[in-house]
Amino acid sequence: MSTHDSVDRHVERWLPVLPDLDPDVEGAVTRMGVLTRHLRTVKERVLVDFDLPAHEYDTLHALAGRQGRAAPSELAADLAMAPASITARVDSLVERGFVRRTPSTVDRRRVDVELTDTGRAAWHGAMDVRGAEERRLLDALTPAERRVLADLLRRVLLVAEQRPD
Image (tube, rainbow, N blue to C red; front, side, top):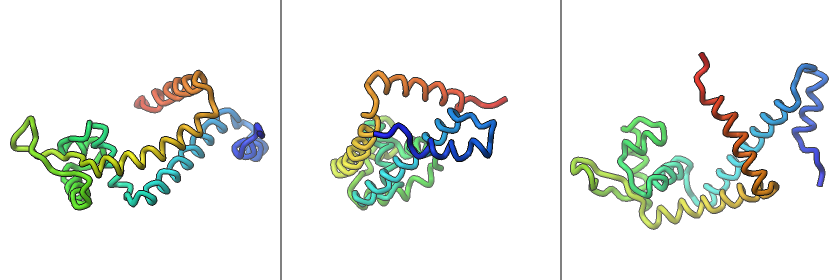
């Protein structure tokens, strides 16, 4: 197996043009971008295979992350949407039998959105395929290396999440 990838060739091409280019920074950032695009492409292909538009999958995913039940306002917050915008998403998912509206258990004025078995199965099927690709990629590393990678990426993300002064 070759130890050079397409990003190595990219860096080699740019070093003569940008002599101050840090090959480690360029390599890391470019690899993160390539991997992100790869995983996005896999997600898009999986969603087509499962006949799930991305916005429906994202809504099912948000619901699953809340143990299968949430208020529309909670879903809107999770999806960074205006609360009024969630209604159309929920309507289409109700039509497909993926969710149902149920009275809230904490506020009788509220209606919650709940995953159905069909919705959970659709979400889980797409997740299984996506997860298999993520595991395939990260199986190139030992468990200890995966932990180090996760820790290093956390450190970088913490800097990105800070507000610049």
